[in-house]
View: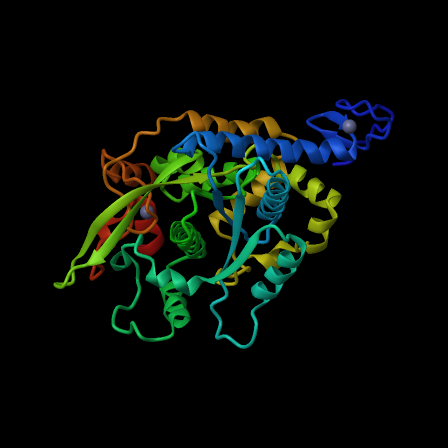
Length: 387
Ligand SMILES: [Zn+2]
Ligand SMILES: [Zn+2]
């Protein structure tokens, strides 16, 4: 954000030309850019210490989600730059970012999708990262979801996967639940791809602002119990489900996988300013975010997620301390984990039973009729899937 007071020098390097404002202090262009990069590099370093299994230099292969929004684009650009720096420094271990966009376009395919075209633009600008476009329909083969909990027609497994997913979304009761389930499926597919590619962590580009919005929309969606674990950096449990010959679904294994948010200390407005200052990003990041978001969810109605996102974007500038506090306080909440996990979103189930969430929010649904696996859903997913 350009500062109104341009007479003061840069707080960090004392340069005279300091037209930007960084946490209330004047900043020059270079110090602003360096601030964002350093914040992320610091978090990546902390993550490396957290997850490494040996003190010897290791090959670092990370998978990062790219939605084409500002934050995940900044994540991709800084990862690319980091990979470049590692490749020119002979003493450092290999650093290999794999950037994955999940293409949520489920309309019948004709030619190259807009998401693939846009990914090509990113690929041409960021030469030290690998880019991949994965269709959302690939999620149907992902075993970390107990598919019997979702309204997926089991009778037509050979049909076009995109058509099957379209019907699944059509069967969901509200815009909010479609947005909610879509986000869960994207997260499952990113985790699945990260594990499949032997990556050592999944990186998500959420800003402080996005994490605050995620926190409150998860509470509103009835998943308050899982919020501390979901918003914090660290291990997430990935269960694997198989259908037994008699048609029952069983959890067959589970593993722990690291999920980190390396841009968690940067506000959304700072992200936008950063993009404006870095030409490779400015050229490629779509300015109209509606283009980048999913068309599974109708734009006419807003989901709780969108309402929260817009709310936090609007209060961020004036109340950045409060926005940061939502995330910081959540990080300090009890991270106790139940022993069983929701078959849909994969979040830990409340050990004391999620009837207490139902009690708080009001369980007014008559779910359960003819739908298998309801007991393996958290309260939030019950509401999303069955209304
Ligand atoms: Zn400076
Ligand atoms: Zn759930």
